Image 1 (cartoon, one colour):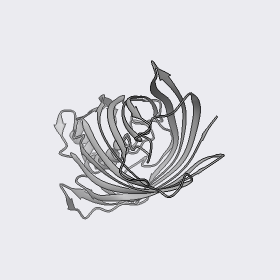
Image 2 (cartoon, one colour):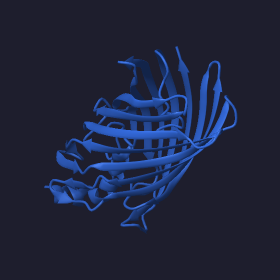
Image 3 (tube, helix red, strand yellow):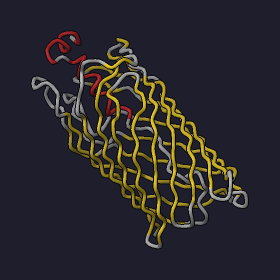
Image 4 (cartoon, helix red, strand yellow):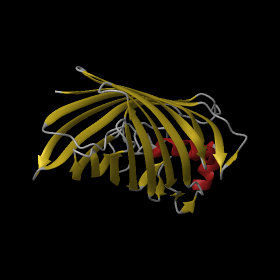
Length: 294
């Protein structure tokens, strides 16, 4: 039945497209985010994300298929900082509204655009080590992503993933000089099965591992800039037990500028992928954020 479905809608091509929206749960930490919060407060964050993907790569080689896959998203986050036995802690919930489209897909492949609510992520973080005098921190966090987003089993691209995801992350940050901070973090992501994948097919994904590191230069208490590197590996998928051979090996970078004002923090970020083993490479990623306490 799967083979007939593939022949009818050229689904092997669409499977690669659908994988694009299945790797959106990368846990990018923001510059300075490993620094433990001080005291109790509430916080909110509003972000705009634009992503544009281009040429397709298979096993590290550029293929003849090209695309123009765009994603626009508004992300909304509410958080609360507190302490547990004098250990800093933070919890937040985040969701989004997304518009995803592919302008160059063949006309006989239906439902390749998506507008709707994204999945909801809940995170809880603890800092077992927080040395404010040295400005040195070690934190750990757990994440869960709930399938609350818009999902249509007959659509190649969706705002929601129709799966549960959990993740564990550990991060370290320290001051290298008066104006320079360095951070690094590791995380692993576990995904449940999607039993309504492009119809009623069963999609399974292996563990995904993410590594990130970056430097932040602080000009003064208001302005700072950062440069970060990210590496993702894993997440190979099977459909109805058939190995798709689509392991993720992604190298990317991100540049960040931040400004801290009395009314909140403004953040602007730009990045792209340097290499992508088995998907459409990300040509451009632009993020703007506004964060504030209340």
